[in-house]
Image (cartoon, rainbow, N blue to C red; front, side):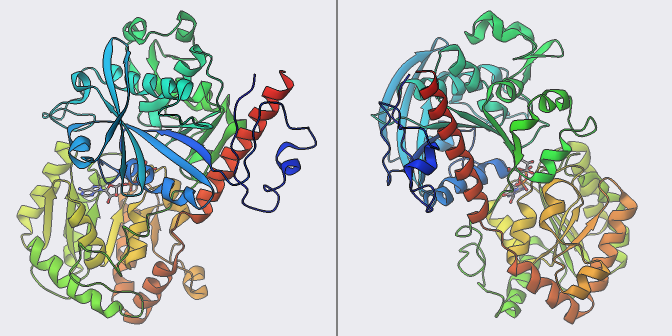
Length: 522
Ligand code: ADP
Ligand code: GLC
């Protein structure tokens, strides 16, 4: 089996063909071009800025740009939801196909530094509502079919390429792309695959009755592939069949191997632990930059941090807070149990007693929204709850509030705390997943050493959350301590450079071992 392999020459070792292939001679049919990039097909259900419901979109929209400087060029396949077609008007048709009985048009579009491939299938994606939920907040009834199609189209592109381009590696993101690995195996497509788990809580679990509709050979129904407690799981297919598995922080990679955090998948993950690793997310430093941010009234950096005050005033005005000196705490989050937002409502009276104020923006669980809205009603001018999703408001709150609270029960990585750090808003986070490793708690040792960037507490504990809020408000009352925290926070390295290097290294390892295996198979 031979195929063209394009491997970039970046560091001195990688530039040597002997370094790449060990001492083996270069197999016939392999063309090694030193300066051409490694080609990645990424497959995901959202990508900033064309469609976003959360952090997945941020990662899909920023990682490819960081990978470019690693000699890795990515094309990203996403569904052409109405908002995507509206945002990508400049596009051209690069393919048509019929898969799973659906007619698909494939568009290519260059957008905000991303090379997008848009899967246009109006029957499945031209809908009201969001990528996953309808107008009433219910899952689209045929999500299994919608994302099976995404995966089938991904596998077809892997097999046949598109407008003369072929990927060296296929990178699947979350359950929505998980079946790609199965479709590729079924079609004998021999290209290495990586799956990144952004959140193990979402597993693409559907009744086993849909299996015959997926167009996969019967043996994929087996417990070693899709079968999952009597149902089937698209994520499980990705975990079982991909060549490598990553998740979005090393801590979360360890956590999901335990029964407590493995959400039913611990055993499956343990069976693949030798190929599982954690790579922490970075942020798009062009999009989240207080120096250039177009969404905030006053730009600033560490040296001009006093200008933040104007943003604070703007936040008070636009969110309808009574003006004052008390700290502004903000929450920018899905309002769900995972995010621990239910812990906050009971703490509101204590927060108000300390002279602080609270702004919450988000969408989610009606019970959580109700409890918070009730607090806002009782403490008008001190507590504001904004139900909705607004990119602009998120930027404003990072630039103008003093503290960002992220009380997640579990958090694979979390991006909000990284944005907060960059904007000098001090994060209060639960000690879990990516939050635990990206925020340094202001305990006595860290404070003395001058490395603290925020406050941590025990996940799920209301008492400990209150203690962390109390510690943060005490620090806020001391301008010297607060400025030191802000300084450390804003100096944190939140960029993609190191993590993009790790992804690039993983891609190259996979390409190399695949080339080696193909060679030894003859
Ligand atoms: P998750 O993806 O689990 O929701 P992350 O912290 O990784 O959590 O990413 C959340 C992303 O969604 C961030 O970009 C955050 O700013 C954004 N976000 C969450 N809620 C809102 C909201 N109500 N309005 C605007 N942006 C939001
Ligand atoms: C998921 C996780 C979040 C992570 C994001 C991007 O939505 O919940 O922790 O930051 O994916 O990887």
